[in-house]
Amino acid sequence: MTSVVGLLLAAGAGERFGGPKALARDADGTSWLLRSVHALRPCAEIVVVLGAEAARASALLPMSVSRIRCDDWAEGMGASLRSGLEAIAYTDHDAVLVSLVDLPDVGGAVVARVLDADHGRATLARAAYDGVPGHPVLLGRDHWAGVVETATGDRGARDYLATHDVELVECGDLATGADIDHR
Image 1 (cartoon, rainbow, N blue to C red):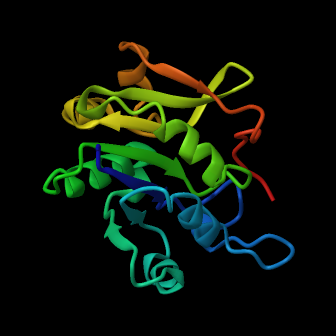
Image 2 (cartoon, rainbow, N blue to C red):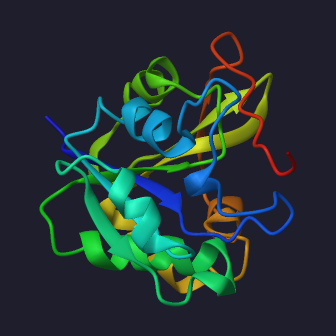
C-alpha cells in the first residue's frame, strides 16, 4: 500500500484576488483553507504550505495538519512547491498529492479518484477536467527531486510534467477544477 501525503499550496498573497486566498471565505462563511484541507482527507497525512499572513492562516488549521512556512512565498507557486517537497522528503511517504487552496469545487471525490491512479514511487498523474489537465497532481517520490529543480516562479511542476508521461485522470463529472483568481 502506497503512503501518500496531501500537500496544499496556500502561501500566496492573492494580489489579483485582493488578499491571501488562505484567508478567503465563501459568502456563507466557508473557509477555503479548511475546505481544501478537508478535500485532502483521503491522504495519509496533510501538509499545508503557508506564506503571506502565515500566522493568521495557521490559526485556522486543525492541530492534526502539519504546517510549513515558505519564506520565499513571494517568488510564486514554484517556491511553495519546492518548500513543501523539500520538507516532506524526510518522511517515508511514497507519493505526494499536490493541490491548491483556490479550487472551491475540487473535493474529496476528485482526490480519491486521482489517488486511485497511484502506481507507487514512479507515478505521475493529475486530474483533468473535460480533457484539460489541472489539479490535484500526484507525484511519486521518484519525481520529487526533478520537480524541485524545475519549479520556478508561478510555474510549479508544469515544466517537469510537460517533459514526462503523465496519466490524466478525468474528473470533469465531479468538478470544474477552475481556480478562483478574482473576487
